[in-house]
Image (cartoon, rainbow, N blue to C red; front, side, top):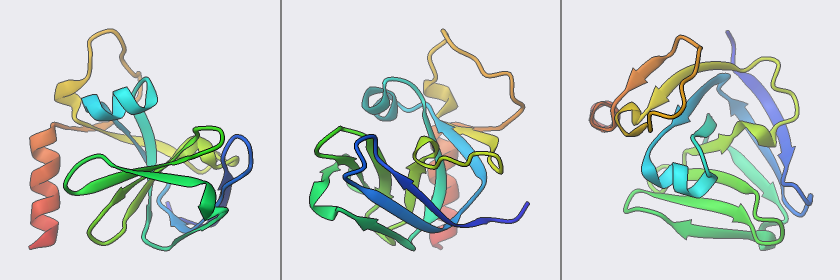
Amino acid sequence: MADVTEVQGTCLCSAVRVTAKALNPKVGACHCKTCRTWTGGPFFAADCGADVTFEGEENIAVFSSSDWAERGFCRTCGTHLFYRLKEGQQHFMPVGLFADGEALVFDHQVFIDEKPGFYHFANETHNMTGEELFAQFSAAQS
C-alpha cells in the first residue's frame, strides 16, 4: 500500500490547519500511560514524517512531555495535533484530524505491556512492548 500524500486536516474549531506531505497509512495505537492520560484512551496515530506544515501556528501550544518528544494541541479547542520527536521533528498525528480515513489500516500497537485489561481490539496487529519499541528506534539511529 502506497503512502497517502498531501493530506490536510483541521482541529475541531478550525483555528489550526495541518498539511502532511506523506502520511503513512499504517495506523498504530499507543497504550503508554502518558498517551492514555493525554487522550483519555489509546492514541491512534499515523507517522507523517517531518514534512508537516501548520496554518494558525499562533493557536498551537506545545508541551515537552519527555526528553525526546513533545505534544501539540490547539489553544482554543484543545484538539490534539501531534506527538513530535524533538530530534528529527518526526510527527505522529492523530488520525481523527484527517477526514478521509479510507486508505488507513490499523497495523500495530506499541507499549502493549502497558495496555489496561478493560479493552481489546479485534484487529490482528504487530504488537510491541515499550522496550521493543525503544530498541527499534535505537537500531534505526545507529
